[in-house]
Every structure is written in C-alpha cells, then in structure tokens.
Length: 240
Image (cartoon, rainbow, N blue to C red; front, side):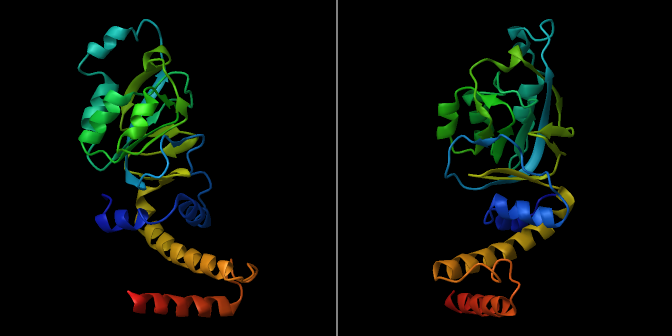
C-alpha cells in the first residue's frame, strides 16, 4: 500500500526520537540507521518510501571508469528511476572510503522530485550537496569515486543500510537526529501514535518549563497528569 498524503503529513511533524520510542513499544529495537547524519542541519523533515540500491565490493576487472558509459549502469538507472516522492537509499556496506554519489547525481534526483537520499557510505562534493534543497544523509565526506570500492549491483531489493534491514516501500523519516525506518505495514498506526505522543511531549515540556517535577509526569503514572493533559488539549483546540 502506497504512503498516503495524510500519513506523510503526520510524519513530517514528528521527530525521529519519537518514532524510535513508538517502534520500541511495538518491539522494534533496531530501526535507526547507524553512523548516518544529515549533510545540512535545519532542513524540513524527510519522509518517503524506500527505493533501494545495493552495492557489493568492487573488483578491478568489473569496475573500470568506462563502466559509467553503460546506459544500464545500476547507479545511473536508480537515479533515473527512483520515483518522485521516494527516498533513494544505498547500501554501501558502511564503508565511506569511496563515495556513493556526488552533486551531479543528487541534483538530478532533486530535479526529478525525489524526497531524499541516504547512504551508509559517503558523498563526494558534499559541500555542494549540503546547499541543495534535497535532504541528504551520509556517514562522512568522501572524494574517491564509488568504483574504487563499490559496485552498484541490484535495484529495489532488500538491503542493509547502517545495520538496519530496509525493504522497498518501507517508509524513511529523516531529521537532524538521523534516519528511522518504519515497516510499511504499520506506518499508518505509527504516524497516528506519534502524533499523539508528540502532543503529550509538548504538554510535558511546557509543564517542565513551568517547574513541574518529571516523576509522575513523564511517563504519566499519576492520574492528575493525564487529567491535566486532556484539559490542555481542550484549551489548545479552543485557541485554534
């Protein structure tokens, strides 16, 4: 089932830490992509379905620079076929010693309407990529071409990225803290629960800044905390 616009809108308003807690409550402990961070802080939250690219270790007889002339080269094909609104996510085997892509390819993704790009490797031209509107996440800058270490092989198959299993169609959410992977079949309920969790966290933060103690409030083990939260929601609704 495709990601709905309403669910996407909800996920754009919640944080990756909130999603991580929600998924943990559901038994998912390993959905945060490790050692991957945004090239530029402060961009709008990235939300989109996963479109995957899998790499294997490069071998010299298969990966001379001339392979980029091939019109069926998987890296180029993935860039031209990743659907608008999706996120291209690359399994670079957690090896940032060679780039997963550069500013030309990522500019093409941006122009095509792709929602973002994620790799557990690195990007070359990282300063230029950071200035682009498209959200981009990687391990660290890396100048060498991917051909020196990686062979792009399979498109839109299950991959591992930053120690997380990613299946085509899973929903990726990325913000200043990093990238979470939400299994596609529970994304609607996760969005709904995270929306309510975010409301409660906003309420808690407001109470904390007013001097309330955290015990009994977060988590809400005291009944008065829940009563106050419901009243707080009503007041917020009246002010809209």
